[in-house]
Length: 390
Image (cartoon, rainbow, N blue to C red; front, side, top):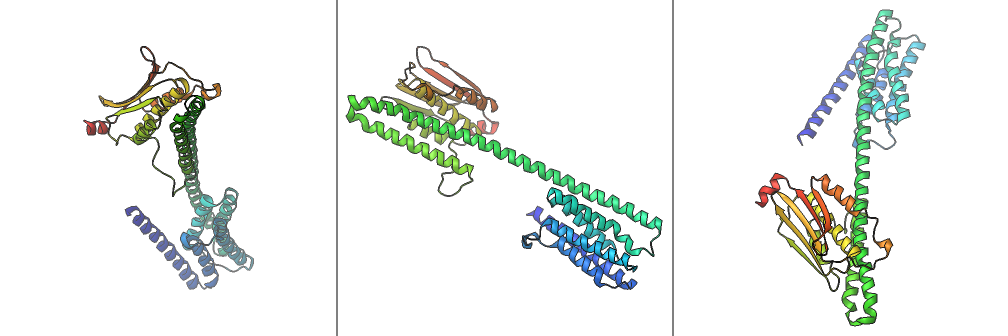
């Protein structure tokens, strides 16, 4: 609020200064007997172009139109005064307006129009002494041209610098959005791959049970239905974020501790148990929660892909010495009947290691003593989180 009020005060001061300089021009023109309507018309057109409020500016009043028309009006006044050999008035008000228009042209006009409109405004500024062709000496005219050229270059340089900052900011925002959307697309792949793998495993189980134990099919089919529903929900949430959608989409981040609870609860197939042991608070940093979710998701997906015969899967979340430990273990022996195309490309753990190490953590995966597999990840926590837990 304070910044907005300061901007309002600064804008008001600029408007007041321009109006005061315009009044000086008109008074000087009237006292010199040059007639006031021509300079008044030029000033009105220029002031309207500069001071028209952005919120009330019509769509047709583009930056190129705002900057070109006043410059052409000034040049026409100069050419008329010179051609008719009648002195015309000009003063600091018109010069200030033309400098403002030069700034607008260089900063806001489209690239090609910025050059054209900028040159028009600069030409209008530098040719105004021609209205005093009878009164100006050569030294005075050269002095005005020198001062005007320096002011025009300074204003154009400042506008070009600010335009380059705007461009860099636009590029940075576009790059950030593109990277974020790629990350969201990768998350979508992880969500769908996890649930589709579960659907495939349970479908194979249903096919086997159809001939051996048809009465036990209902839980398996319910699991397939739940996995498909969750896959669709994950896609809807993620695509909704990609489209900046609002409304019915669930905007709670999927990658958090609550998501780990849901993931574990829905994982087990008939004949399996999936248990979550967690004593960590729910207010851990979101980036740590998201990375922990990815560890559990990848570990459970790998169980389905490579150890479908596992009967017990355990997920543990614990705090130890200012670090969050995520441990996922299973007792599988590597028995799986999934097609080769469903085994993945082998890059899941590679990408997971990048996520973990980016947060200063460590990731280890390998066989357990006897049989089974485990994935262990450790994340350092900020001092604030450690104090809250302890």
